[in-house]
Image (cartoon, rainbow, N blue to C red; front, side, top):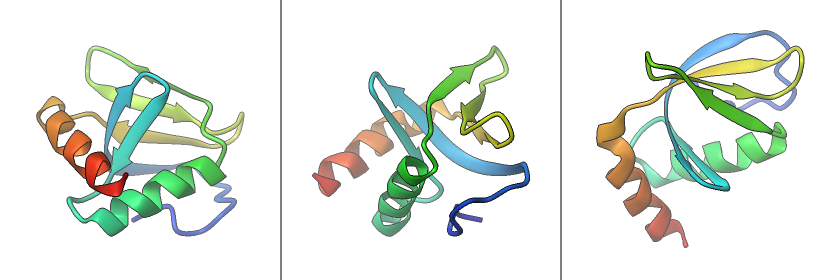
Length: 89
């Protein structure tokens, strides 16, 4: 499921790919550019403020005190994420 509804109130777990490129957090669910574009803008709309990673490569993106999304980090997808972003530029 993509974050396709603004103001999601409950906590849900999404199997998304995430890669932290400094100020820019890249998140995508598939290799389709549409999904990348949608996720990027939806995360901006949700006011994503921070992202942390633990040794189990599970990332939590903080949305607010009440809303959190757990994202799966896959290092193999880092290059793919960069390629997708380059195409979006």
